[in-house]
Image 1 (cartoon, rainbow, N blue to C red):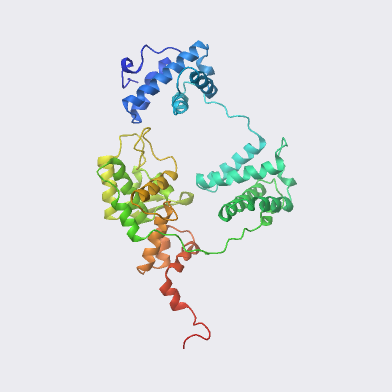
Image 2 (image 1 turned 90 degrees about the vertical axis):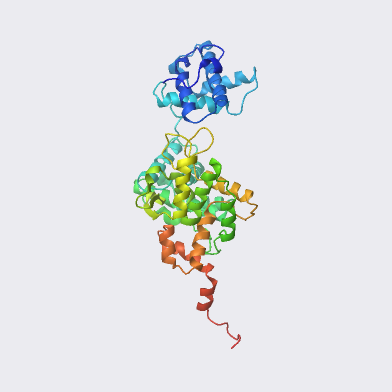
Length: 411
């Protein structure tokens, strides 16, 4: 690969060591990911000095692993002031070499029976059940904790030894320290795992029925939605003359006008936009795809971002980071962060700072304008009408018309 910069500005001398032949590749990666020349200079110099240290340690290319990064950074810390991103830079370099097959992928740390069973369960959830990775990670967290509570000292896991008392005891202990919503996730994960164990033949009886139910009153609270006035203030606070403001404005419109989930925005690719038909293909939960009509306001915002403000990148994600490394957002947390900072900039203080309140706000506003729960459920892509039914409590006027008169009240 042709280097994007000359060694003359980045290095005082030609690099040496086992990684020296691949410094050019690293420079090309930094260029493609949008790093400034100064940032690239610091990263390239660090990679070159790491290669020189490996040479002094007589380390061959085949032996290089992330363990050497830790050793080198300790050594480096004794001689000069380290930078906060030094570890990330070296891991970034090694990851590039892994991808190109120059050095072998590191073998995982020792796979314990608990880890192996948890990974098999996670694979089942992804491949057979089609769950989102965020959900899978939540489930895996509790299953590791459950297995550690019962099989931490055993070389083999025998799920057939479990009994109802084990299940109930674990749930009772965990429920004491968990938020009710988190505890409900735990019980759902446990039921799913126990059904998986029975499906695999490791459990002979239906232990999932033994998982206690965590008290969680049905539709106990009205959804926390953002008001129409606050939505307008948030949109107005975006400086669309800047790349960040242009991107954030388009994202906020997708939240406010189409009620997209944060995860759905992160997953959007350029191929999901059908400009001729005016449709946006949204990948929802469990991989379900749903085409949604693109409102003119939303389409114009996305088109402006793509034409004028989207950084150059090989990534097919619609929305990209504005700082190097230039790539799509890693998780839905990035969308929540955009919402939080925008609310702060607009001077709006709300109990909740996340993106989901825009989804609630859209549903509540449509309900007030006369839309039916069925229509709202279709727009929000709810799989069950019970999920949409919670918004019925927002329409207080309709509920008053259905309410029976209080006995002994005014005639």
